[in-house]
Length: 148
Image 1 (cartoon, rainbow, N blue to C red):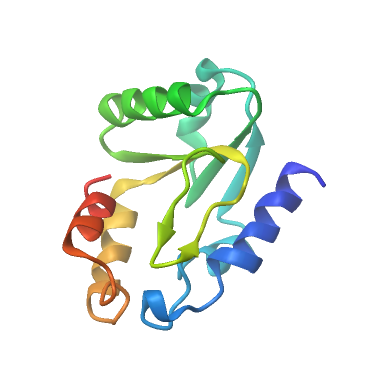
Image 2: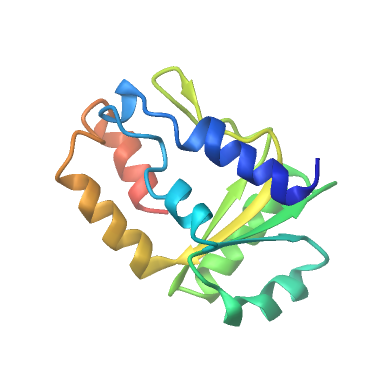
């Protein structure tokens, strides 16, 4: 399966499935719509310079599919990019970095760098505040996610 197929499968089979952990909403309630409308670009990672060169064409979300990158290296680069580009949010996705919410794992099993506009993400999180999305989350978990 190619990179686009892997991301699409993850969005449909994991991120778009409602769960009680998220107030009967999907883990990423906006992913499917953005995917269906072509707002998510999937690119194969070439280099860190290539990532930076693509930032000016960012739509809703840009995902760089990676291989042979350690979780430590990905976390370090994610921090670097978040500091360098504060108007964007860079999120790491790596098989060694399991993200689990009360027994629900939302990882893809692949290594990715996910990039999105910070304001858009903050506005989307505000919409979720008026739902039960965060109800089952501990205050620490909620703060960790929001601080990203």
